Image: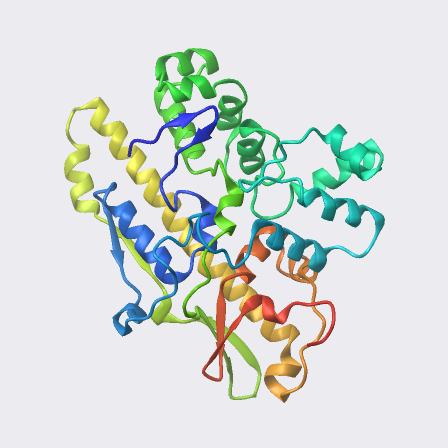
Length: 355
């Protein structure tokens, strides 16, 4: 897949970014995977059964920053701040800092100017920015492209040491596809460099743009809460809403036998793309199910006894599930669970006070 990187922007394929995979509604995810399959001849996509019912969960251009947005980046960040941080002076600076971000999530204004306008100390401004950069979407609050990509690499769980060095010192060589110079500069072989470039391709150059999107026309729940024989609430992934992928190993093995270096590199990258995508999809459903069960446990009084929802913070879920705050926020926003035939957004069960 040809992907071009520039100093002032990176063009990436839809759903090559892990945040988008977690964020996308199920049917939008399916469509995006079909788009990816056009570029990867080994990727096979099995539509969720619910598509046969004619369900629709998004507008055609759901990821576009243009058009009427149901939730702006500011709204999304402020929601996280209010859910995760108590009312202390630093939170006031953090809230104000959000207003300085552009639509892509960058802080283009010098931090010293922000300090003067807000009348806060340099240390407090730096602390607020450091907190802002831990929020979802990963990369928000960056001051330039390199910092944006670096923040995302720092949050990755895989080995990204080479990719990080390339982002810091070699983006121009990546933009010009100068593999030889990259190998010489970073003392790596072509496969290592191509693997690092592949990691960079998965990053988002404009993390904030994902959050200016049209509201779903209807909701498609991915999790179901049900009571077991003992009356205890449990969560499970709805099979009919799950999209599945597979890899055409026969075709791949046939081509990999050919003695063509360029073809083999292409095949290796396509295999890596698939493995990363398969892992990301499995983690998506694992995270949704884990959070569903956490909600079922913490809100047992509501599900099992018909009582009121109890106060619940995002930080509580972070502590209990060992997920990051960014992952939890991605999962509870725009994703729905089914309870007694009705759909509820996961964030419905999080608040400071009982609903």
